[in-house]
Image (cartoon, rainbow, N blue to C red; front, side, top):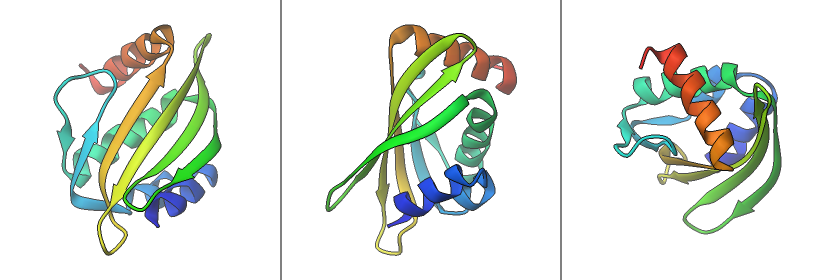
Length: 122
């Protein structure tokens, strides 16, 4: 499954290999905004940016089901510790079609949203 390949790419600090797994029509749901982002190029840009924002990023657990895969992580943004989950769904070819991120606590999400906004110009 591509979620395992995505995890391996992130852990190898090879975000390009991770984003190469995205389906052209991937949908990304951010914990910071209501409207999802769509398209491989847009989602790759977001993931590449967040890759530079997170500090001490590490996957701590992995949950697999027949239709979805969850990668549990911990990271830091500045002085804010956070925990999160990447919920990944793939197509029959193993390309990532849906990528939903959930983050806690709210102070960690706020720090991430602020830093991402600054770097993405939003």
